[in-house]
Image 1: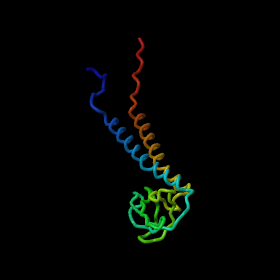
Image 2: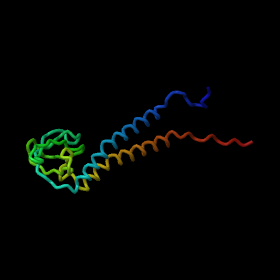
Image 3: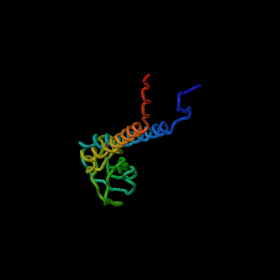
Image 4: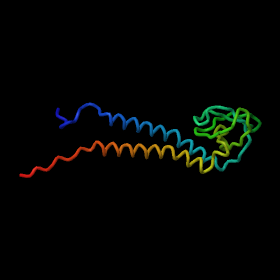
Length: 150
């Protein structure tokens, strides 16, 4: 089967790269959009005092514990939580979803600036991917054959 001049039947590196970039973009959106949604939903909730438990906060691996209806609840903070200077046992203010005490965010982390910063990551990644794709296409464009005149 002839695929045309200069075309190979093998998978081109550009196709593999495109699939990998799209998978990474999908993962980025899958991680950051729920974090943005959580912070937006919790923006109007009442702040309450909680005890901070150390961890890798940017990866969503730090927790807080606080009293709810006489019981102690431990909840994970969302991905992208900024907790500079906080150490194990520090008191922090959190906002919890009404009826869902396991969904919390730091009160200082529910502002519009934080939401904008979290949205900037996937949007920026998308723009970079589109720019890289456009540059690749411009570099790979084959010059047109000169027109032969009789």
